[in-house]
Length: 274
Image (cartoon, rainbow, N blue to C red; front, side, top):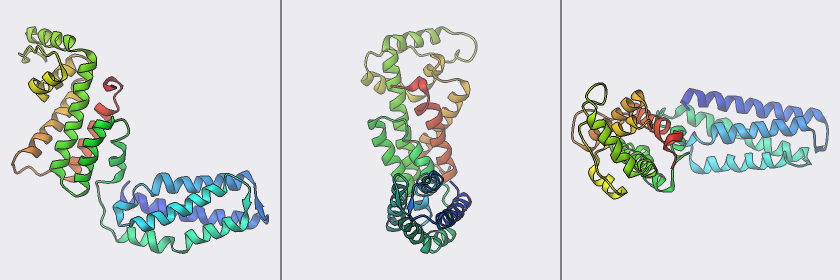
């Protein structure tokens, strides 16, 4: 989420809270059990937990302020799951609104916009194994501290791990057979592939098969198409640029593109499920 989108979400959330407050006041009841009020309360609370809370740390909001509103919205959504006093609803809403603009909106307006947000950082972890998550947590920790090259190297390591495990699942005999077939091709896209591997274990695969060759075999085997191969090759080039001295910068835009491609082409791809 970009800064302007977050500001809109904050303003909409504040307006929704004001409308909910008026709705409860106009109902004139002491105990709230109306579905309209309960559903409106749940919708407002979800807006906080789904749209606002996950990203505010990137815009200068401290953990104690975030936790304060986390607790308040938790209390609010809890009220909506049972028959609760209208006065408790109103006190909770008024407590949220009291410093909502000064503690959140003003701080966000003053903060420098960050392109690398928790939005992509959290999503990259959605379909990874515990071993991959260990690499990616370190990678994202590097990106949060602007060590972009280190983040790229670690992120690619997690991706290659997934590709190698996919080959292991396919079977090393089948992998060796594919390389033999590719070596014999004399025309078309695969004619330059002139290697024939004989690997029998994951450790051999890791030790002897270059990442670039692995991408070619994955395309030939149908795990990726030509466009996906090209995009992953660019990610691999970015990894190599990050691991070796050079003048090409790694920017936040590069990082976002890198992780987006890894997520969509590899980690979220059913063909790479292990």
